[in-house]
Image 1 (cartoon, rainbow, N blue to C red):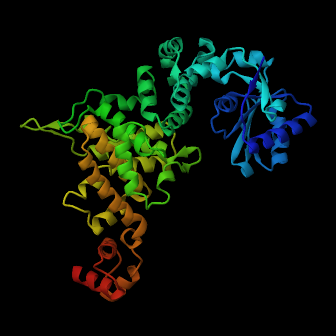
Image 2 (image 1 turned 90 degrees about the vertical axis):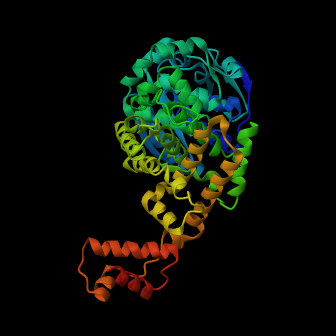
Image 3 (image 1 turned 180 degrees about the vertical axis):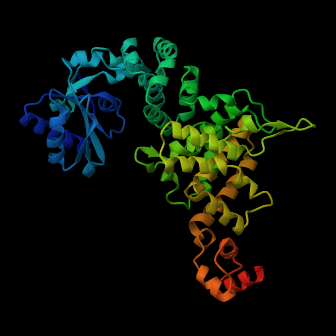
Amino acid sequence: MQVQDYRLEAPFRAILSELAAVLAVQRVEAWATGGFLRDVLLGREVKDLDITVAANPLELGPRIADTFGGDYFPLDAERRRVRILLPDHEMHLDLMPLASSMEDDLWSRDFTIDAMAAPLNELASGSMRLIDPTAGLPDLGDRIVRHVSEQALLEDPLRLLRGVRLAVLLDFAIEPKTREAIHRHSGLVSEVATERQRDELVQILRTSRAARGLRLMDDLDLLDRVLPEFAVTRGVEQPKEHYWDVFNHCLAVVEALDMILSEDEPQADLAKSLWNELWTRLEWWAGGRTYFSEEFVPNTHRCSLTKLAGLLHDIGKPQTKAVDDTGRMRFFGHANAGAQIAAGLMHRLRFSSRETALVRGMIDAHMRPVQMAQQGAPSRKAIYRFFRDTGEAGIDTLFLSLADHLGTAGPRVDLENWRRHVTVIDYVLRMRLEERVVVEPPKLVDGDDLMSALGIPPGPRLGELLELVREAQAAGAVITRDDAIALARREL
């Protein structure tokens, strides 16, 4: 054991003190462990608590939940792991049982930086006795992800992916012998339940280094195991406008999204210029910088799904590639084909239907922002149709289009071309958020109105007329109810 000083925000100290008091009454020994303790030692923002207890969490959990006015549910009943949601503090507390001794418990964990513990009752004091049998603290200092043992990886092959996630989350390197072990056993990840693979992938994509994570997965022979459908993009050549083949282009698009969606200004000169051009133009959008950090569904954020769409947006190109007599490459229908492949992949990984619809919608429409601006600023009617067709994927698709621009040009990116693309996206986004009549025209007439005024029966033609009226409203050509009926009458 060694004494370790650290800093902990006051709200966490209060929670830990109260929790330690509750456990003392129950005469239960407890230790802070895992990612919580690691982040405390790194000085990172702490959001959740990992606590190991010398008791049965299934029995202890409800009592702690009652104390904090939180909700309790088992994470893994067989392994007696529970989660307590602390709504007043917007965090959760995970309880897990102590198997034997604390040192034995730590030796059974996956990576040294998460194989440390400290007595819970000491944490609120600002100084603690650190239990560190695997030398995790030196690895934290050296910024290394090192496995505790190769056997630990074999016991739960999801840990192969988790090593990648830790490396990109913390911006650490994976220690060479650990890399070798992950690569050697990469095939075992296919045995892991698909929803667990999905959860690790989503967390990798949520980081600001998602592209690095995907390339690291590729280096360790994990990418094709988790996303075998994506392997067909390797080596597929593209027209000269593209700097990369399809595989590397898709990874470059994810890298562009890492930069574009960052809430902080990048350090590299070119990235800084591109980022500033975009976000200076979008300063008017109050929620812009945090839009993609919002949860889209529980535990999955918009940025993860947008980056997944970026990775898969051209997955339909290999099967649609054609070369004409002049040698020109075409990919007719690749967006729709890719959307269908992506939907199948997401179904296999057990994403929800809403998540799948968002990604599918982005991929299907990823070329439309550029297409509707080929003759200058997009028309109001084109913008209406775009958001009508994309629904809640519309804004995300605009940013995918920006990333596709950067992923196409690669290091040949031209700042003036980027400025023009940003101008288009800014204009379309303003229409979406500030000119609601363009996206959601108020209802002037309904089917009954048109049937009564025009003497027509219900049917497909009636729906077509109503949609024609809405498009004309968006374009500013129809303002009143009389305008709407007159337009419908002319179209009959």
